[in-house]
Image (cartoon, rainbow, N blue to C red; front, side, top):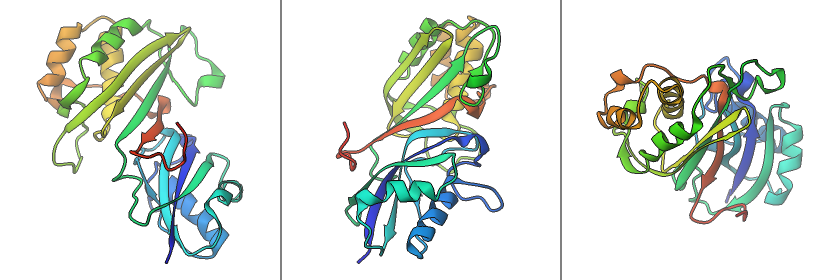
Length: 254
């Protein structure tokens, strides 16, 4: 009987065309599958907890795959990482039950969007942050985010083309903090709609952070469930999948 292995994975999405396999383009899924094949001589399909888009990063993505290999779980991270390109790294591995699924058993996912809010760009932050030179009020953005907490319909922040049948989700935690010139926007939710974080951050920055939209207007806008009111999506460069939560953490890390 094959063993099911869960992996915690990091990747820099700058030169990757998202998590999911795309013919003719580099994807995280394909790179992981090729590395596993190199180790075991057998193909294993990799399933991810989140389908990050082109250019989006991950510091805490979780995936799983089935294998006939006798290699114990704790020995997977280092040799697998050596077979992966420099922009993908395996942090941890664990054996899980045969019916455990990285995506369907996830209770929540957490994303962080980082903005470099300064008058001049920084070369060393270019690949991880959105450089935005107009001053942004992080306190107002934090207050606007608070209106999203709880079980909501967030159709306003869903890109066209989604196959999901509804836009209901439970927003568990939000935050927006400034540390010097860096602003970090965090959202933890039971699920995320297609393009949700980029549309949400785009609205927060262009409208709330610059003071052209009040908190009540922001709340009224998303409660209207109209996608026509959402005009701007933040670029993928600042977005990162930071964590995935389960009833029991397969890696035994708090």
